[in-house]
Image (cartoon, rainbow, N blue to C red):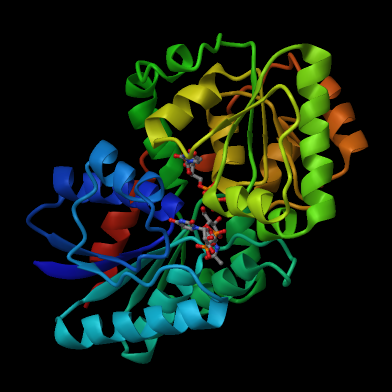
Length: 362
Ligand code: UD1
Ligand code: UDP
């Protein structure tokens, strides 16, 4: 029996962990023992506990309770806590997801102690080094023992950086999750709770630092969302990340009429909202992909994306924070049919990843 330490901290990592934990529990309970370390990067119940309760992610063995702060401070506290955990337990491997500060700290702490690092969602690049996520993912990829690339584009990026011999094209574990949870999500009841009609609202999310912490960009995006709500006479539903809620408060910004602000919602509620939306507008990596998975068109409120295949397919348009581009893209994509092709694997990425991990643990 091999023992693996899974590092999570931010909302999307808890959701991703559900796919791998489920696959370990179902298919490999006698081969792999998983311990979960939660860094505490996200800590509000709606950003953390709700996903454990809803998705059956095992309760973390360790919660470092790090909380919010500047990048260096936050990462340093995580690094220290993860190092101590690795020194006191006999772990055969560390599993990290994505590109947050928790990912960076996990990969760095493990590799300095010569514990093999397995990186899920490897190889993504925005080619924008100003993004903290780009810094984190490049370092994590270069420290990792095995890299699990969700798409061929990610594999190509890793080949370009000389990492191909450590790479497996696994597919995307978030497709596994969408396929697994969508039938259940459609009974979540969130549309009824907020009086929403399928196909008659737009769904938006907004949390990237370059959008929230730049008042001009934030105002421009909100203005465009307000205009969409006004012109169409339908709601723009906006489940808001606490970072953005905090910025609206500091900057004394009120939302335009027609925007329905919600607290962060659960994953099943989010899948239901995505599926019921006529169109999705987002700066989230996970949400732009899920829009494609549930076959809804998407406006990406960023200058570039790591998930460029969705844009190449014509299912999404990059608009940045430019109201003119947002409104034009909205008109172009509204009512367009999106067909999901096999760009993100076969829906069983978790099994491919665990089989590969088992082959590479000493
Ligand atoms: C982090 C990740 C980002 C990911 C996002 C997922 C980094 C550098 N960024 O961004 O890649 O897309 O998570 O959601 O790791 N806050 C709360 N309650 C919480 C958590 C956060 O109020 O439970 C507020 C605090 O004001 C905090 C701010 O949100 O300062 C930002 O949180 P932080 O985890 O630093 O970054 P995110 O923007 O969430
Ligand atoms: N999500 C959620 N509730 C919300 C907003 C998002 O459950 O209110 C889910 C979403 O379905 C996706 C993931 O969180 O699976 C994306 O996380 P986020 O947008 O915070 O970060 P990113 O993917 O950009 O790193």
